Image (cartoon, rainbow, N blue to C red):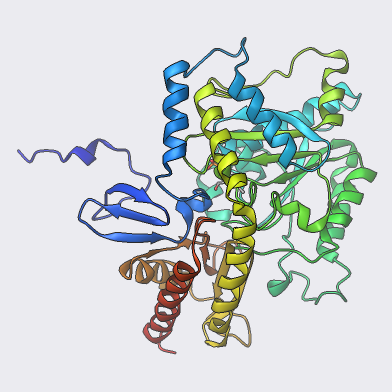
Length: 448
Ligand SMILES: Cc1ncc(COP(=O)(O)O)c(C=O)c1O
């Protein structure tokens, strides 16, 4: 009888021939059990903002674990209070009520329910639908997946999904209306208004969007007037504006929260990943005072929550991470290193297979095309995204595969580069060198 390998007891997310096992991390580097070193140029999945193996965080974890790790939600703990206050200091004005959960999907689900509760408490019980965008990602739980616009990840679960409307993403390189900014007059934002009328504004509870797209269309950012128009439409129809900052929050785009690039204040923000830099599972839904006050005007409960939400260990760890970011001025470093990386990667756009190099801060995307003139994507069966990621991996650099389907739900290849904010100038140049060679080699292999 063949003995099972220890890893055979894992219910894998995908099957593959060989799994590399990571043993430890230090700064931007990860080391596997075979002695290989990788530059983590995607910070896990846009998570590890302060880099791996930071001792201060391990110390904070140890200190809190020695006190208390878990309490039932009838109690408060000091780390929870302190972290909520820290988040309030970082978030745009008015977004001061922090609801703790354990991951990004829980954060977006909570936002969906908060919006619903707000309308119930303010005399609009018919409002329940959430409008979102195609080429978007809000998580894998059913509410979050219903709001998400990623065709291949929705497909298996369509029978479970809620009937929520989607509008096109503001994706200028592939404008769904065949227009060009600014002559387009932001038709993609106006589409929100059209869909609200079509569905009936009395049924629409919220609109949710990632301010800058994360993994569905790497680092696509809309023009300057997009979110102000969205804000105005939401206000006019009494629709809660939710921005999903799970990827972009806590500094990733060179400011605390990406929506600040548009100078717009949403009603609810969802966050995750960078809150704890991956040192512990924690996420948060941050509500504007007006939402919170309306909910608690007459009612005395928001009937929602998860066992681990706000546990003191995760809160203490996330607080230590946010203090570390502040102490080392890492949001500024992220902005500076992001500018440098974007400048150095920009020449890749001269290659026939590179459509765009784009991004803000350390959230950078590279999109590939088969025909640059016509902007035709590669046939998905070629697996261009995987080829790019694998080639970089062979040279010791980890980049993030963009989700399939950024063009039309099926085709479209792209990768994201999002190293820790602690990345140094020489590490940026090393990543750029490897990616320049990788993409040149990809181009050769594809016959260009
Ligand atoms: C923008 C965005 N929102 C929500 C989520 C879901 O987060 P999680 O995987 O932690 O549930 C993700 C995950 O990648 C994300 O990118």
